[in-house]
Amino acid sequence: MSILKITNLHANVEGKEILKGVNLEISEGETVALLGPNGHGKSTLLAVIMGHPRYQVTEGSIYFDDKNVLEMSPDERSKIGLFLGMQSPSEIPGVINSDFLKAAVNARREKPISTYNFYKVLDQATKELKMPFDLATRSLNEGFSGGEKKRNEILQLELLKPRLAMLDEIDSGLDVDALQVVADVIRKEQAEGRGFLVISHYARLYDLIKPTRAVVMINGRIVLDGGPEIFKRIDQTGYEFIKTEYGVNIEKEDVEMNKVSIGTCAVKESVK
Amino acid sequence: MGRTLISNIKNILSSGEYLIDGLLLSEKNVDIEIEVNSTCDILLNNIKNVAGLNIVINQDSNVRLSFIAEEEMESSNINIIVKNNATLDGYFADFSTKTLNLHCKVNLVEEGATCRYKIASLVAGEDRKTVDVSIDHLSPKTYGKFDCFGICKDKGKITVSGVSHIFKGSIKSKTQQNCKIMVFDEESDATAKPILKIDENDLEASHGAVVGKINDEHLFYLESRGLSEEVAKELITWGYLKPILEGFKEEDVKNHISSLIERRMQDVRR
Image 1 (cartoon, rainbow over the protein chains, first blue to last red):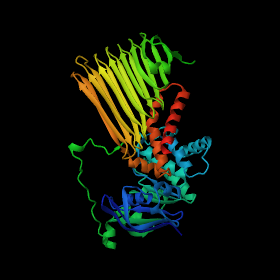
Image 2: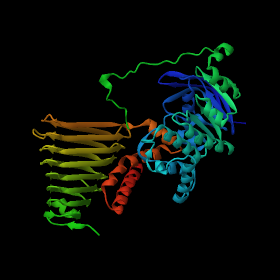
Image 3: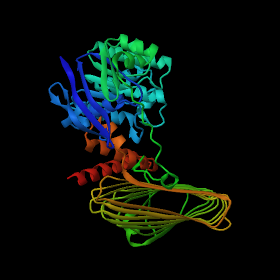
Image 4: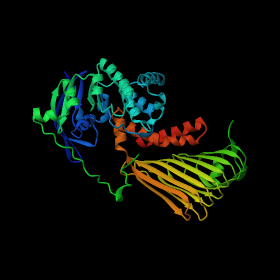
């Protein structure tokens, strides 16, 4: 039985259509590899599922169990069991990591967790991830290395225990040892029945967490859905076979010129 | 050890920790002179107004001036003279609720004089606040730094200004102004006007001001972990204003400021 069901999903960013009719179902406890060339909508799909306000859904539906996800705010989506491990986690000055984590844990509990129990859980999770405990007492992601940010995402995954965790290039910025540590935690969570939808460009992560399924996203649609042999083949030969064998023409990523000129370089839209 | 209460109009202080009488300060001009080579920690708490506070910091002395603007605070007029190799660290935690006019003028009159002045201000509802912190560099190798962090929400209005003036002859001086105000909604109004006046060549000077809305990516990140928009904004507000606590020594005073922030945020929500 599917826990996530996406039907004919279309989404825009700033008037440009990125998702052009995505259909995807994921079952409870399943680990799915989401593959595709750069700029074809993988990260957008995960952000839209999580409710990023930058994207406008113009058509289609997303259901989690029988709940209409598109009618929910991001915090409601989180509380029903969705999680997004981000490619570039935000650095938020002044917001202490542990304060944030405790607030996030309490957001899904009727009775707030005691400080003692919270620190016990946090201490254990940071040890599993081989994270220095002082990362928990620093500003959220501020001054963290790329690898530390990614471990911090996995730390949140461990504490929040989602039913479906979406991981967007969680392996970028991780060295070999750190990748192993993160993969160990993902495997532990898999064993506890958590589902995963994982974007990565490298077979190394997939070799470690062993997805049961792979889907390929091209031109804003899922064009291929099959077993783990797909990511092995893509890792060896690239995406060319999809054109030759499945007749899907891979549109090139539009790279727009930077619109910022000298006259506007000092303008910020928000306060960092 | 408690603080020594300052209850006279004219005072000469040696090293120690002091608390200024609020009633005296609201009615009279109070003069304080810090003796040479002293370290003083002066707290202004439970004060409605500052009619005039004049401080002279003599050679090689270090002064921390920590100031809490309570809910009743309306105006404040502070003038400080910093002499040879002396240092002022000023901390102003503003959680007042009315029309506040804060004026602070620091004169770095002798070589090596230093002033670091930090303000955190929460502006909401009917609040109308004007903050002016100006630093004059009147001698060589003086250092001035002014940081202001503000939250402006629910129709609040704030104007932050300040002139850092490096006078002729104040070579190798350094001055910095940094003002960030986060505006939560379209009906709130924040203005930042950091101004540099430079009459010398051999120096370092910088100023920056950012007035902008809350970062959407930050908000989304917190919300995606299950925090409601309201709680996420509170966490960001708290993180933004909290660094001012470093300027206050006693734990009970830190707790008092924390409760002021929380109370003000709750008042606005009602």
